[in-house]
Image (cartoon, rainbow, N blue to C red; front, side, top):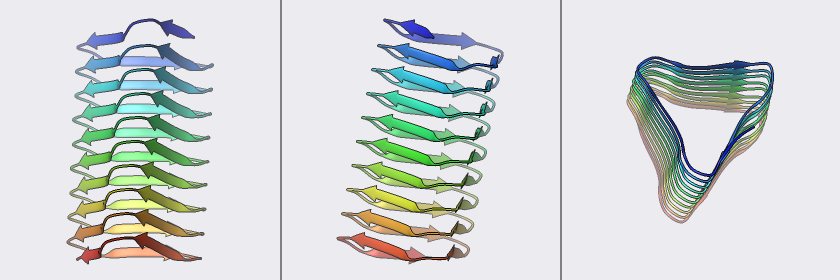
Amino acid sequence: MLQFDEGVNICTNEGVNICTNKGVNICNNEVVNIYTNEGVNICTNEDVNVCTNEGVNICTSEDVNVCTNEGVNIRTNEGVNICTNEGVNICNNEDVNICTNEGVNICTNEDVNVCTNEGVNIRTNEGVNIRTNEGVNICASEDVNVCTNEGVNICTNEDVNICTNEDVNVCTNEGVNICTNEGVNICTNEDVNVCTNEGVNICTNEDVNICINEGVNICNNENVNIFT
């Protein structure tokens, strides 16, 4: 384990590459910052764990890739921010868990891809914001859960695709907003559940496709608006 009382700062003009047969664990009381002009690549057969009292910030001109046979876990009292000119790719056999008291922000010019054999879980007291010029793709064998006290906002020029064998659950005290120039596609063998105190807004230039074997449940105090 790497344990620090202050921050972890990595600044390089080339890539950050971590390859190990065991886990990658970072535990500290301050910020984890990675700045690079090339990619950030983590490949491990065990867990990737980041635990910090401040934020996790990744800024790179190329891909952010995490490949593991176990879980990806991020726990922080502040924000998780990923900014890249290329894609964000997470591929693993267990859960992807992000727990933060502030926002989860992903800004990229290419795809955001999450592929896991278990669930995707995001819990935050602030917003979940994804902005990309390409697609947002989530493929999981278990639940996809997003729980936030603020809004869930996805803005992309390509498709938003969620494919899972279990539930898709979105719980927020503010709005759920999806804006895309292409389609919105949700495919699941169980329920799609959206619970919000504000509106659900989907704006797309193409189709909205929901394919499920069970119910679609939308519970909110304001409007449900779909523009296509």
